[in-house]
Each structure stands twice: as structure tokens, then as C-alpha cells.
Image (cartoon, rainbow, N blue to C red; front, side, top):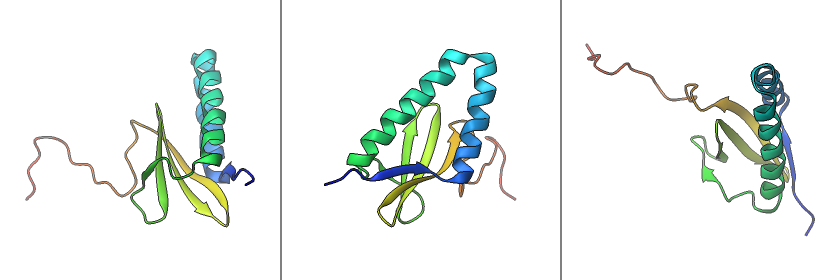
Length: 104
């Protein structure tokens, strides 16, 4: 069986390249490591796309590659990474309420 194609959506790719560019100004070695780890992850996902946990939305998968969290979906035989965010960013669909604040 041929390997499944794993790719970044245009939006995810833009976000990732922007993040890597900023990180490489501060820590070039860390930026290189993230890119190396991402390529290894894509290779693993090509063989085992369901190895990750289910995402919030039906049909999605959540992939944790610290410090990044990726969201992927299988679409026409291709595993597309549709979203990339830093683990400190608020997750889509989750509401944030400061600790100690009471609802009125």
C-alpha cells in the first residue's frame, strides 16, 4: 500500500512559517528542531493517520508536538494539517474564564 500524502493547508503553512521565522531570530537551533520533528511526524502519520487522538470537531485529529498543537483531517485520501497553534494559545471552541471570576 502506498504511503498516504500528509500536507499542510495554506493557512497552517503560513502560520507555521511565520512562527518558525520569529523563533529562528531568537533560537535558530530550536526552529530547526521543530522542522525536523514535523517532517518525522508527517512520515509517521503517512503510515498511521489514526494514531493520534480525536479532535473536537467530527472527523478531525489532534496532534500534540510540543510546543505546537496541530489539527488534521483526512480528506480524499490525503491527511491535511488544517491548523497549527502554540500550546499557550486558546483552543478553538473553548471559552476562557479567568480563575476567581464568578458568573453573574
